[in-house]
Image (cartoon, rainbow, N blue to C red):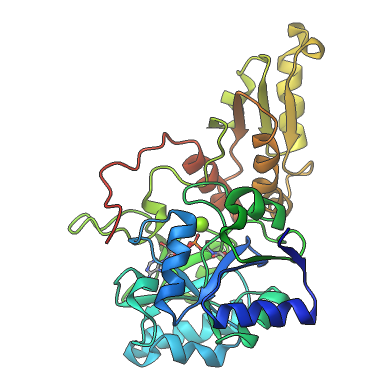
Length: 352
Ligand code: TXA
Ligand code: MG
């Protein structure tokens, strides 16, 4: 068993492993990461292998303190307006679930950024994650610690179930508090663009720096994948998943073997009353609710956790209700919609 509780000793051991080119799964406030030394191309290659991740999909470099930013990114290449946004965003949202796309320094190997001239940088809010980064090389490249395309892990056990012994060790820091990946925001040129909705809501970003449009599509000219926001299927449980609005989910009959995942308690009650004459108590149906009161923070924290649990139960179909399209609801819906798409990776390059 290589799940380890976090102590001073295990953090030191993990940091040493990273310095030697190892892979360490670690907790973050968003989801668990699979970390390697961001400056070591061989260790970075191991991340792509362990996850079966295509090399065109770049990694996030995690730092432990704002000063480290200059070692991996070059803010000197930003114009003064972009520079101001960088300062405002880092002062307000770091540490926290916001990843910034910035001009890259040469010290970061091309493998980390899939050959892009930019690098994704994040300062996580999880204390153990920051201690691990500070004790290792100061910059840890880490994707979510799941096989590519699958549900992100929010607990050490999810990492073990998904990756087995592909991580050298798995640090257990308890469940992730946010439960959704960081928001990826490109401020490297021109108008800021949100490449992936996540734990920092668009509204909060725009209140600080002005317009930040969602841009999760590929560049139509080059077809270059800028974010897995691009991939048709991602964040997918093994069990088939369908995402519905309230009206549609209320029309779904209570068949044996299905699971219903409601956003809030009143929606679940609406579905149950719509089923009144259908003898529900004789059916094998699993009913789950993300947040009884419809609290978006609580719902986000439970999303992957609940999907992992439903995935273990041998259910034939999960029907999930979409959240309101506001705040974290946008990221919740993004994950539900991508998780419910057909798996079509064909047509995409598998290697750079
Ligand atoms: O919350 C998180 O962000 C977690 C934890 C572990 O920190 N990490 C995570 O990493 O979700 P991953 O690899 O699953 O997602 C990284 C995202 C992808 O959407 C990737 O395309 C995008 O960041 N990305 C990385 N570098 C980029 C770049 N230079 N330009 C545009 N997008 C980039
Ligand atoms: Mg991921």
